[in-house]
Image (cartoon, rainbow, N blue to C red):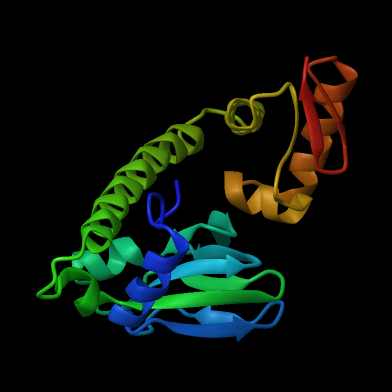
Length: 209
């Protein structure tokens, strides 16, 4: 779902002015904001892709999400009133981000624009959908062994793509970080699953058998 669903191009221009939107461009691997940074704006990806990650208590990197054009991030943090970011947001390719002023989002102008109300409705829906995704992520990480976590991840990717052949947006190292595993152990298990006829893959393209 897109934060601007149901809002046409003319309304988009008016809305971004109303929200005092600021557009910024980031190079590949550039940090958009880090853990502990003050967050006052919701972020919308105009171009590129962004990775959200954090470290656990042992210093291991955990990928929270991989976001692409049309996705938003930080909206839940600003709506919850969090003063500091709990995650690190990094551009994983050259990206253009539109930052939307939080106070302006909640303060509907005197004209009570239809498209401003639609924006708030979209944000609420997006936060609700992300909450469902979080529950699914908890289910994945609660699996007893690595194979179950791999299958859980691939099954969700298959459902999202609506095809038995699908791509995942992660390198092997990123995939390992996403499911909380060692990269070498992940590679070995993927090879075993392929030999056993459970899956087939080439680089980031997978097929569940």
